[in-house]
Length: 136
Image (tube, rainbow, N blue to C red; front, side, top):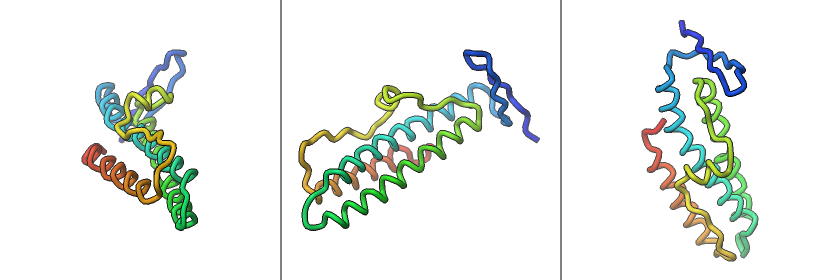
């Protein structure tokens, strides 16, 4: 049976969390998973950027593919953040924190050819997997 840990926040509200983890372990879990969440947000924004700006003869196929991919990426963030909270840790609270924790590079190019978009996203997805292999 798991014990219930009461975590006090800055406003003295209690978060009752059934966990066997101590404070250091909760912090360690947060420190490992939060960069994963930050990268997922960055990958989501990059994927939506390309979804919104794709052009060319394969517009419809790429547009749909990128939308589906973006939805799958953003779905990860909620699962991961809720896991951290369930264990009594704290998770990302701002765009600034995402910016500090992410490894995925921004893409501000005014124009990217459709095949290059796919290539960049393939690279970023591979980096996402390699950077966080064994993290969770």
